[in-house]
Length: 194
Image 1 (cartoon, rainbow, N blue to C red):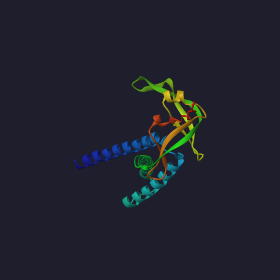
Image 2: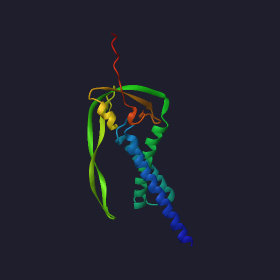
Image 3: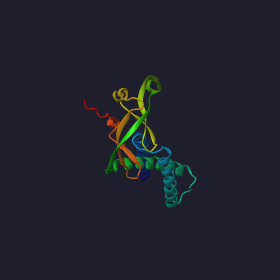
């Protein structure tokens, strides 16, 4: 009976770990558009933190550092740390540092993607294609970011036009854009008096 209980506990721990890793990857992907940083910087910091964490964990458990368990722990902790970075930076941003920046639309483009379609219980194939509307914006300090916009907003945005974006300083000092895809408000020029 003791062996069955510990096996069940081990499976529960593995399941929770997989869910945490998937949550970290999902959070990283979804919040990357709102964070003004190159993709490799948070990943590099997360991998370094994961190496340190895995080394300490292996030393505490008195296990080999170069084993399959340690490799899985390294991948898991890198995913979780990357997700924690993006979520913490976005959720705990300083609202007092909010500023409105005017950005220029460098280009607008559509990404072609495909839905998946299930044929039967074990087979899925590539389904119909659809498009995701994106614009590349340039900030005043030279930073560029490609962000997703809604189809209605995409049809109203022109290349070279100015947009207003709310930017806050994140918890780790990395700027974040707040307001979601509808946050890009066009800058209306001042009207001339008649």
